[in-house]
Image (tube, rainbow, N blue to C red):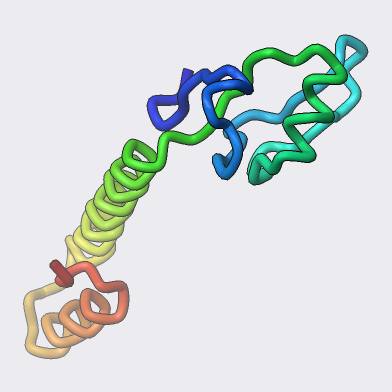
Length: 110
């Protein structure tokens, strides 16, 4: 289970939420793709196919997960720049180039 998703029944107010997993029938045929916003017509179609529960995104957890991924990417970019510039001679030119690259890649951004 993804930390940013939760299992809900169709009766729990699934309308307006976003599917976190695709829905397939017993033969593997796609019913509704992941990322679809659940509407009343989708709920009715799923009820006709006797689907009782669906996985939806938990908005609060999804936002936190997105922020965590952004922080990890930020750290990865910083490490990559340090690795690329690890053997520079510390001259004024290489120091300025590193500063420019950090600003360009938003590594120094809060």
